[in-house]
Length: 263
Ligand code: IPD
Ligand code: CA
Image (cartoon, rainbow, N blue to C red; front, top):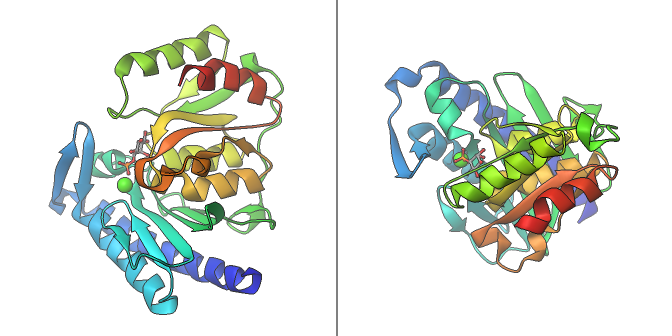
């Protein structure tokens, strides 16, 4: 599908850019926004639903043979060889509260492999994209993971949700700090992966994350020269999620033993 894949990638970037700009309009008028709770610290707004409908609708028109797995709409048009995995707004809590750290994330999975991804933060106007074998880009410029060599100079993103025990997260934070590794928690797993890919962070870890949060980020991060665990290797990872660790080759041994051995 290489020609088709490039076509899909270009189309996906245009769709995600437009979806993000529409969502940014709603972000600016968020005092009018209706949202509801899906669980502890887990929200969905009208903007999330509208954004997913726009992305799925646009892609379905162009690629009617493809399938779609969205955070809000679940699986649609099942049975396709290519599965688009969509988080219409990753960082919904930030979106609702007025913090600019949120994005639209769209990954493409074919035969169990993440092959393309787009992550767009319309507030900072940063669009990350990657196609397997072609490198990773930020606004059309090649990006690479950091070259931090030592764990006590590293800074990683750590994510958390109430899908996992609080104590497990506290242990992960302590393990990092004890090793001299700084951490940040931005509230968007997709942007955490993107920033690990562009070298602002040295990695990203979360004990459980959903496929729509990381499908795009996995390709972008790997194409930027990074390493991630085999997230999609778990047979039901698309439906039920998995642990994610994304880091550099140099930091992989230290971060794997600090974090993966505890999951
Ligand atoms: C959440 C964010 C958060 C991560 C959670 C996700 P949402 O997604 O990515 O940073 O820690 O695991 O569920 O709800 O903002 O789309
Ligand atoms: Ca979301």
